[in-house]
Image 1 (cartoon, each protein chain N blue to C red):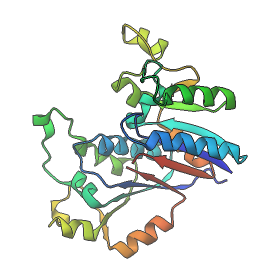
Image 2: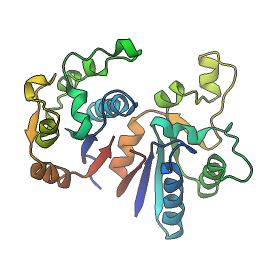
Image 3: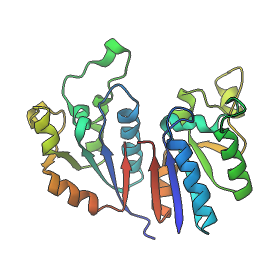
Image 4: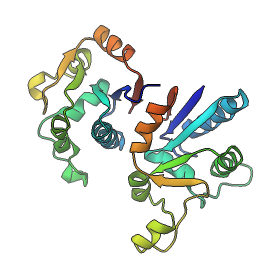
Length: 130
Length: 121
């Protein structure tokens, strides 16, 4: 089955993002396809490459990066939600003349149309953190 | 898979206190702009999103309710409110900013059951 996941929860604030990650891993392990991960609302913080949790805690942003890379998953961060919350790639950093950027490798900033597209082209769209 | 699935956006949270109401409305407008078959449902504290005369500038928030009439411009006519949620909060249809269809919880369950895609906020 083709799944897409909409993730609204920030890491370390709610369990939503951890659950989404576990779901993605389990779906892949069962031979399903992840069509897209869509990060919205506070979920955009999962895409930060500056998150620095203590060493004895689950580094969820790093695990997302690894999963997205090894499984070649389309991972989209809503650009409006991301910019508001300080999630920028190099292009947006230059556009808004900010001092840095922090979007993890493997993620892309794009519009809400990608969420609608995920709903249209997946067998299931599952929300985490509403 | 059909390219034109039915979407239902379920709004269950108060307009302020979290970003859900505002960002849900953004999703609704985009879905409408993409020409999807779109319905909106307001229930639980989500019914407060529809109240007239919201004035959130005192708490440094934009008044997203002013965007609600835009749904009509996008031809979104299927806007539902769960009757029990209104009653529990002593609200009537006259208190609401836009015209909606008020349905009971049984009809709400049927509405949800008919959809291809649910987006909960």
